[in-house]
Every structure is written in C-alpha cells, then in structure tokens.
Image 1 (tube, rainbow, N blue to C red):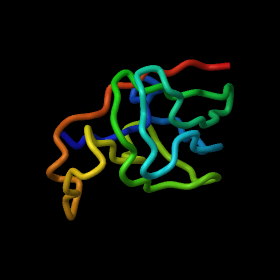
Image 2 (tube, helix red, strand yellow):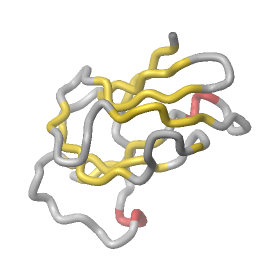
Image 3 (cartoon, rainbow, N blue to C red):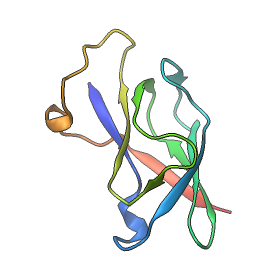
Length: 102
C-alpha cells in the first residue's frame, strides 16, 4: 500500500516549518522507529519518526523548503516495486508517524 507522509497536523494550521534534512532518501528502506526527516519551527527542531516499515518512494520537498502542517512531503510504500500513481488523489491513507521536538 502506498501512503502519504505529511507534516504533522498537530502543530496547528497557521504555522510554517522549514525542512532541515531528509534522514531517509528515495529508495531507502524504513523500519518502525526510523527518523525520516527533521524540520524546524520558530520554536523547535522536530524529528519525524516512522511508526511502520516501508520504502521511501518519492520526496516532494528539499532542504530549506517551507511547508505547512498537512502538506504531503513524500510517498512511502510497503515494497520497492509497488506502482506509483500519477497524482496523490489515489493515496487515501497517511503514513503513521510520531514526532518529537528538541
């Protein structure tokens, strides 16, 4: 199953965040508990951690890009050979993640 990786909505809708770095790249396998990316808010650096395994298939933002909560930043699939859709309308489920601030 292909899932969307979104910036956590729990941050609030009016905040903007800046991607600092991807810790997993396209084609990388992801295990439960792996840190996928880090971004910063005006108050903290946030680590986004996978809550389920998969493979990073496509990323849509790069280091330094600005995002809002709910923005799709990547697609993650169960397997490396799963077909990718043309648009994200077919992606109905978000990848489960946790996040922590430092």
